Length: 114
Image 1 (tube, helix red, strand yellow):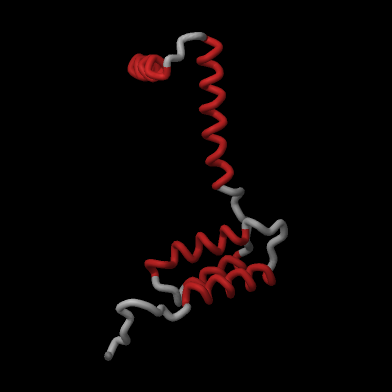
Image 2: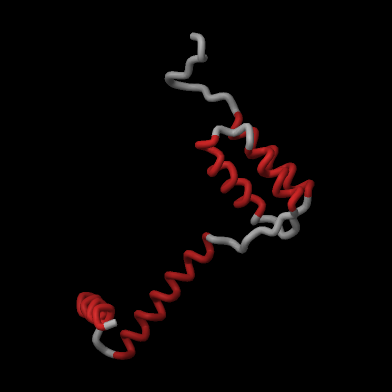
């Protein structure tokens, strides 16, 4: 505990904060900055077993290295909807799956037997 107090004292000294009012203000600002991270982590999404199975089934044909990005994108998009049902899930999964399964074009792309 003493070590933490010493670290806080050094930090406050570096910041030039010595007045108790300034310390309280700095603590409030720090707390508000921590809450900014909460905006990037939306509330958990509640899906039924069949809805979750549909999402996971859609993720199956995607390369396992890209599967995490696919699932993050799906759940990020689902979080934007107030009401989630099979129709919304189907449309979101379909659109995102198409982007992830699209054939790659560009530099250094050859077939397996070319």
